[in-house]
Image (cartoon, rainbow, N blue to C red; front, side):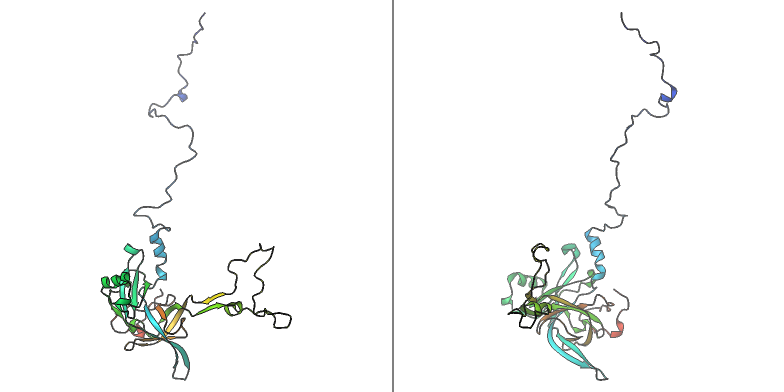
Amino acid sequence: MPPRTPSNWARLPPRFLLPSSSLPLIPRRSIKSTFPPRPDRFNKGPSLPTLTASTAASLERKAYTLPPRTGILAIKKGMTGLYAADGTRTPCTVLHLDRNQVVSHKTRQKHGYYAVQIGCGHKKAQNVTKPMLGHFSSQGVSPKRFVSEFRVKDESGLVEVGKVIGANWFVEGQFVDARADCKGKGFAGGMKRHGFKGQGASHGVSLTHRSMGSAGQSQGGGSRVYPGKKMAGRMGGQRVTVQNVKVMMVDEEKGIIVLNGCIPGPKRGIVKIQDALKKPWPTVPEGISGHAIEAGELEASPP
């Protein structure tokens, strides 16, 4: 006997279970996604701020640490003293400028940063390598004995190629940063290099009066010498920067700049001079071969 068909099979379900006639019959997801869409963390767009991790943002953060104009190369001649009207003697360092000339530029579009390449001195063409000789000839500049770069803030600090910079680039009373390679002392012991006290001078110490002593623990410290341990080694010969050095005197005719105090490096060594980062910028002249700036024209605004 076949099964009996239920009598309520044709009845409709309750009204609240029926779909609304005004809404389209579109299937919806009944389960919420565990991975909803997130906003883009990379704020890319013309109206959005620059990314803090980009190259442009990095250069913008470093802009205030770069001087607006280039520096120069000078030769250290030695030290002397200047006497004031009351008889006070101030120790000074004499620097000589030897044909400082702009060799080339570095731009952000091509090299990633702004810089001015300065050359000083003279060198015979037969003593210059062919790549450097081609570099000088392409810029229309005579071969230079020393070449160095000076970073500048933006393209306004790029001086015309071929221009000669004189001692009037700086003014009396302003402050500069001087950097050079200090004198190399060779291999030195711990007492000379780091100022160690040394071992006892009594008869209890045998032939180790100037020795360093222990270099570390045996078992408690890992049986090793810690990195950065002060020991005997090569002393001197590294780059040293002296900041906020005052310009005492400028002689444009003889190409001499006198700085207050001592400057790193030996005599006849090369010293790089640039406007001090921690002092107000001096007023930038119209041209590097123009008139000397007066001391009263210094700008009072901080960098």
